[in-house]
Amino acid sequence: MIPARYSASRFPGKLMKDLGGKPVITRTYEATVNTKLFDDVVVVTDSDIIYDEINKIGGHVLMSKKEHECGSDRIAEAVQDLDIDIVINVQGDEPFTDAESLKKLIQVFKEDKDQIVDLASLMVNISNWEEIKNPNTVKVIVDQQDFALYFSRSPIPYPRDEAVAVKYFKHKGVYAFRKQAILDFYNLPMLTLEASEKIECIRYLEYGKRIKMVETDIEGVEIDTPEDLERAKKLWK
Image 1 (cartoon, rainbow, N blue to C red):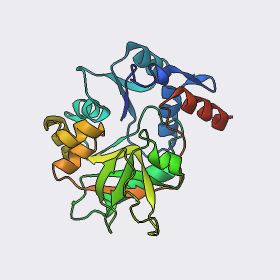
Image 2: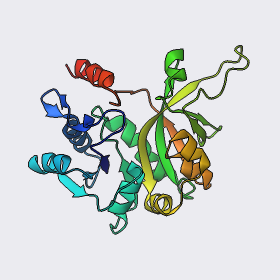
Image 3: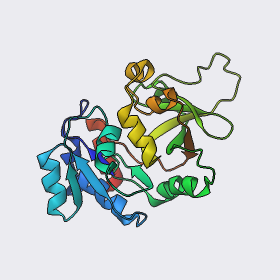
Image 4: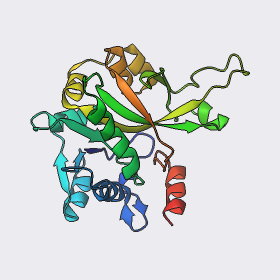
C-alpha cells in the first residue's frame, strides 16, 4: 500500500512533481511493482489528480473515503475488508524504493514463528551531526534484539558523555504490519507523545505494540522539501 496525500504540509503537491519525466508518485509505484515481491501494489489517495495519474498508467489505485491524520489511517481504511496477512506501507515520496530492504522486512514475519512482532520498519545508520540534529530526520533507538524503544525528532540518545561510542539511526518511513496491528492503530486515539513529536509510529509503542527494526544501508532520497527533489533529480540522472 502506498498512501498518497496531495496537500503535504511541508511541500504541497510534491507527489506530482516531475522526476525524470514522470511524477514522483508514479516513480514510487513503478519501483514498488518492479520489486516483484507483492501480490498487489495499491496507491491509496485523497486526490483526484493522483488517482487519475495512477489510473492512467494502468495501476491499482483506491480513493480514500475519509479525511485522515496520517498514512497508516489511510491504509487501515483500505485494508479492513481485505483478506490479507501482512501489508507493507511504502511512502509515496520514496521513488528509490528497493527490493533488498523490502525483502528484509518480509523475512521478519517469515521468521516470527511465535508472532511477537506487530510491525517491522527500516533504519539507516547516520553519522553526520547536522542530520542527527535535524528535526526533519526521525531518529530511533533499539534494544539488544532491535526492537524499537523510542522515536524522536531530537538526537537520541543525547551525547551527555561524548566518549561513549554511540550509533545513531535514522528511521525510514517504510513499515510492514500484521493486519490486526494496523487496524488497532486506526481504532486507538492519539496520545501525548505522538501528538508532541508528530511521529505516528510512537502510537504503537504507547499502546505496547512491538516494532522490529531492520538495519539497511540503502538510504535513497525521501522527498520532503524542494531541496530533496533537486537531490533526487541528480540521483535519478
